[in-house]
Picture 1: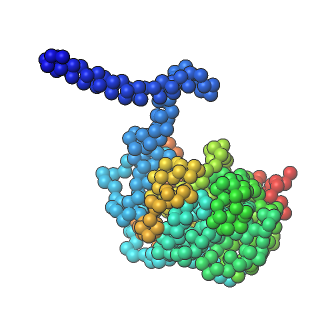
Picture 2: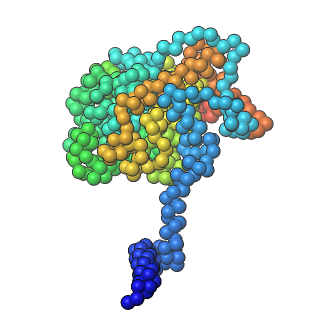
Picture 3: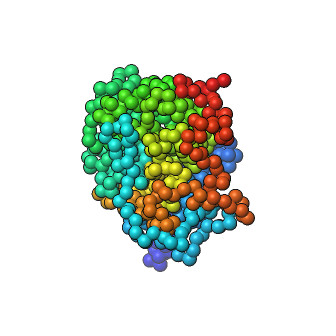
Length: 525
């Protein structure tokens, strides 16, 4: 072969090799896509994929990305549900110890119903005693507890991971406030750092149940004897899913969760919708008195989301008739909830916190019981202003759940029920939990609580008051429309002391009072 031919032959060979390389990589790329398109054409589950093979899959991709794109690109500071970006940013800033001031005035439309305000004074208080707390426990309680103005609301081990529980309790120990266990029981992770505990008992009686799932008084006495356990809370219902039980599927019932709850490992863990320890208002009070005795005189109360109003009145009538007193009542609003719940229950059942808190406040005051029974609020509180509003409506203290989750680093990805929480808060996955450093997050929990309570005291001083418990309904104003506003006591009824006993027919809820029976939660016909 002549030498001059070698050059074009080599060039042609190189071109062919390059072409083949391109073809090979093209085939490697497109053949799988072609196969996927052919599969879409013959599958029977999705009509879009049959009609638009391969291309229709782009829709699912953007559906998966949509929440993240909206949250990080589209939504404004005042948008985002359940918590707006501005609300989450406030918690993050306070938890980190960053600047939490806002420049250039409010972003709220002060002439819309999103704006409400507290009445400040021309002569604000220069100094207030900010160490004051709430004493919980009446005359029938021999070991009352001194509660902070903001505490950690009920979140169970199982719903939250071990490291999240540890960080919350360590933060509570640092800041001097309490940590509610949730109905999942008192786990080893609640005990490590010694923070004050409120032990919640739900219908599953986790941690104090017998083999059949009923209440076991001996096991209860043993756990309640711990000095770390400060109060007992009977959970009647919760805001996220009032009147609904729950099931923790067998695969999620690990050895640790089984030991904490007192259930068999690897079997479905059922929380019934109703308690088996009582069936009537009087039986509930008698059981509460028994729990108080078994716990060595510690305060015993209830938590509920208000549903049928006459049932609240039935409980009041039972306290008046028997002389047995609850030490406290926590009202959970329908807007509350950290766990998963059926959509219909989250969106359509339960009274919101404002109406529920006012109703229970009126029930206690109207029966002359408010001085003996403390009242607390739980439901979406995240700021000092929220605490002040709850005080105006009758609350002695407030609890928060999701706000404390934000202080741990929660980004509101709404993956709590999937076990795929990206920040390691609401998951049992050890790999995901590894990102949550207990010592660091505990400090954030304590800082957030301290800064929020300090903001409440700042508002109290600006109003010219000595304590938050002096905030009254007439201090809180709300818009009725863009042209009219009024104080909250002219919008809602606030009962005077003893009116339900002396003149029940004079109140707007007279029909519910007439329906209530001390011996039954069923309405009188």
